[in-house]
Length: 304
Image (cartoon, rainbow, N blue to C red; front, side, top):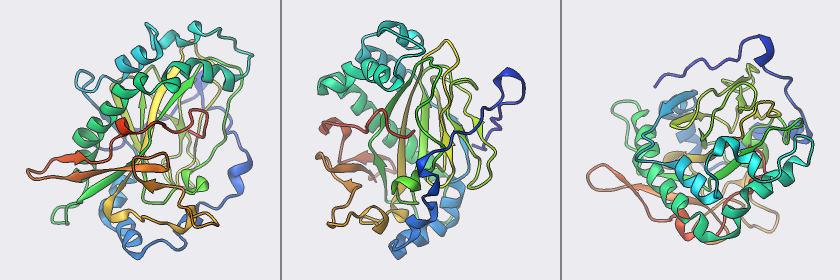
């Protein structure tokens, strides 16, 4: 699907000033240093270039009921008014309010088991086939896609914002990643994620949509940031990253720690970040490492 123009326009909903912070000095291109030659070649291929283009997609909410499952897991009747269920205050600590809102899903594995399983299904049935369809005709089909832990985000109405304009490479993520962002409530110019359309372009614009939409963008090199939620709706969203197998480096130098420990590993234990979604006979995809087997997910108060 071609990328849609998602600009904010002027007036009271115009794009706010871009927040800057400590990560702005980290060079995003540093993640290319020491990258495995096979991964570097995959990133340079035409198929990956197509995936870097921003796009808005739609999914069947009956098949993939993310909003309903999150409402159930958080024990609320309506995600739009989630902030009213945990002592909402526009001036209180935003980080603490987020933690209170997400407490039911972070406290117990069983409260997010259904969501974990749904994410595996969504990646294998929707995301992987979509990414495969972007490959040029005649190119060798991708044998697998590696997808990272998902993060559930809550942005209640507030006067302040958490986070800065950044790209994922500044947090040592490898450059073959493509981002997927799913709003579960209304995402508008007053509460959404703002993204530039290509690296260094600076044309920050909000993703505008809601439940049933999924936005694809190249967050590894494209800067993005949140804004203070000045709407009356809690913005709830899910995001995760996917790497085509041909672009994947199992031990990238950028995220290898001084003691040799790899920050982003493949596996289902506490050290694992990636799961594998592999092509199977008949042309479909199936996972062999499931989120449902894991005890954790990314920190909800980390960079979005």
